[in-house]
Length: 315
Image (cartoon, rainbow, N blue to C red; front, side, top):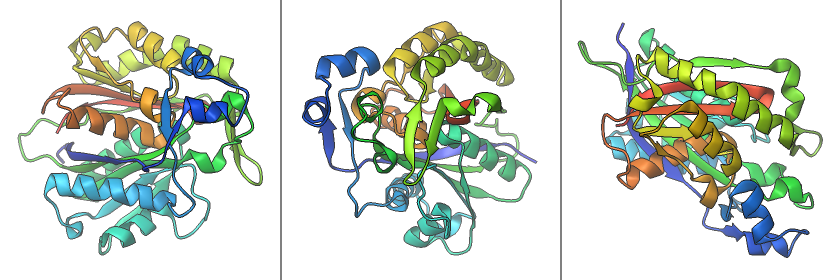
């Protein structure tokens, strides 16, 4: 059994941009208030005619095109999302249908903000076990649909978008491009980040999440590097869940990735939950800020107080 690697990336965001000034006309807030507490300037918002699977399919199609693959090359589709309104068919099956992927295994993974890194690990394990040869892994969320737009503490944070990667088996003698995952959760603290109710609404205990992320996660992120045989100083890139700039910056500093490009896509995209890590990674690759073969730590955290991280090599 050989390892796996990321062959290509892609991302997609809706065209509509919601600025801080726009939000100031909707709730009691201001550009200065939002920037000082979250570091966010803008976020992209999908319209009612843009469901989650459409966002996911756009990102997945771009990753397939970047890899130079046709849909029939994919035999596993995993979509990480927590904003699927319908229970069935699942998002993965809908994405496969949109892209014309003929007969894949198609599964959704709901670990909220850590969903993409859980899905990536699942794809890696599946390929390593020989149960799939090539997977399309997507993180996609339409957070605007579960946001209370009258609550200024939460509505300033969220945005919509999707990111995708193609995962394929490594050849004989080829170094794996996805290192072993480190994952876990604090289930008794699951109430700290929630999407609950009818209709479902996003809410969180901001101070609890901030303290947990900035104090408990740095040693876990360093342990994820150890599983790849690296130190944080060896990293060329660090892509954390894009929750809040006030969490990302101290967390990056405490991890010790002193030579890494740190993704700060939250500034322009807001918190897109499972979409945030693959979208931020795709943008760094697209802009040339990361090169092929660069070691990058992906680390998701949030809902359920779950976390998952692994070092990958850039495609």
